Image (cartoon, rainbow, N blue to C red; front, side):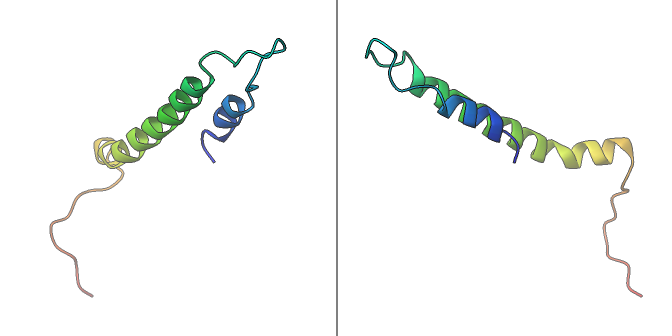
Length: 67
């Protein structure tokens, strides 16, 4: 659900202005919004394991312990 509001706001821009001209750079704004959402989600998802190890919430183990 992250980024849905930003993407909805970009998509809600009108296609044409009141005088009939196309909305300037509408497609670029939608593309940039989508790319920014994708990059921030990927950056957060890929950096999470590093931060978990850095904070010390999980200690890495090399072998699985058997019962």
